[in-house]
Image (spheres, rainbow, N blue to C red):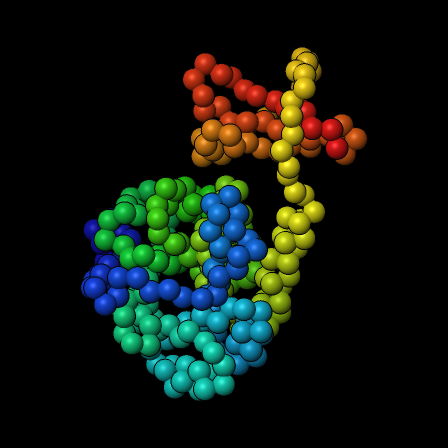
Length: 263
């Protein structure tokens, strides 16, 4: 069914038997600011890609409705969660609704999207030309929604963009590839994020004095409105000076807070 606003939108019937379906393939190491694990679904017909994905903990696979025999074959040799695209929507092996698919071709269609109306718990966004629609716009469109939003990505680099947009990213990606290297590269990306997260750990500190630091470079950060009281940015001018914690401007009559942490 094609909606009047131009978005091809399949609205799945949310029956009691399909209200909530838990799927694997989450990546706890890349939780981001939202605190939720990122999820990776793989869309492929390559057995080598399937094997590499399962070995790295990604075991949710998407098949066309004509590939049920392939799904059965893979299920006999590996523990996977097969999903099937049918009539523009996604169903599990028992024909229960899993996700809504949205095809978006231009920014105007994205602006008309109403995330909280008629969509399933999981939403898969197919950007027909994602260079025209920045990943930040997709994240902003679903800001505050409880839905898990996936974007179809054809390369690991595209997936990284969707995971990092607005410092929050989407809840997951559908990686549509036939090359094993794409799986290896995306897993390497998550491993690097793990290493950075483990190196930079924050601990509580006591402020013993406050001094005027003078004027400095001015920047505009467009994610400050997403922060809650007590949250902020850890900014480093250089490794010798140290780090500056800039808290968000969310308290009335308070312009900004700066705490200097000597590295």
